[in-house]
Amino acid sequence: MDKKLEKAIGAYEQGFTCSQAVFCACAKEMGIDPLTAQRLMEGFGGGLGGLQEVCGAFSAACAIISYRTSDGSPGPGKHRRETGRRIREAAEIFRQKHGGITCRDILHGELPKARQCVTKVKDAILLVEKVAPSVPVASGTTAKENASDGHTKEYMKQP
Image 1: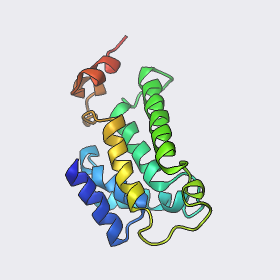
Image 2 (image 1 turned 90 degrees about the vertical axis):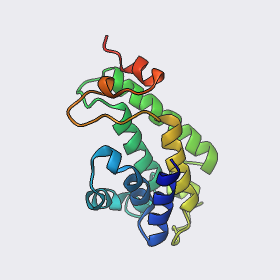
Image 3 (image 1 turned 120 degrees about the horizontal axis):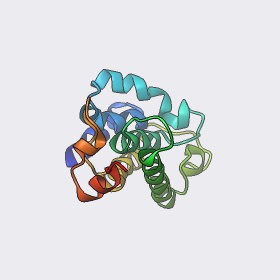
Image 4 (image 1 turned 180 degrees about the vertical axis):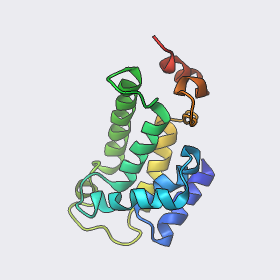
């Protein structure tokens, strides 16, 4: 995790958005190259393109949590419920720490300034590791086949 923290903070300090910094720190584990990850997440910074809606660092954390918990199946199955539960848990933790999950709430209506959100970037990485510490789903296999810890294996069991 220390390497992910260093990578995320370093990217943010270089000028990447909060969402890019968080997502790119975990891109390799998701099989996404850095440039693609940067391009995918650029518009989430500043609370969705500067609209001050959902915090970009938190949005990136949610994408990573979803990747780690979803099996990609359609329908309202067990994995979707578990992913939703973990996202809600993450939102509550982030809300308690920062006073909300929107940039508007977190920054008290002020526009984000350069490098102002380094704490949110750090906390988003820590949040991912707390809420969804499992090994990610590998390409071409199911989450059940890739589950690495007892908790993950339990909720990944097929009915």
